Length: 81
Image (cartoon, rainbow, N blue to C red; front, top):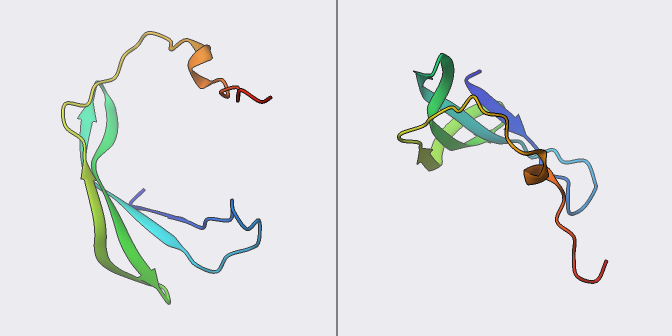
């Protein structure tokens, strides 16, 4: 996968025509898995990929074989709930 296109509808709950784009770049193998080293947020308009707006690079990535405790993924409980 080179690009991920997405829309944000969480706040309005309405359909959106605006597409945001993330480019996955600089792929490398980490413990047998192919992972991107760099994420680039790009402009996207009328089907044309544009300039880089923001970029994030990962260094010293590692993959562990141990299973993560499922409690890590539980929804936090708000004090007033």
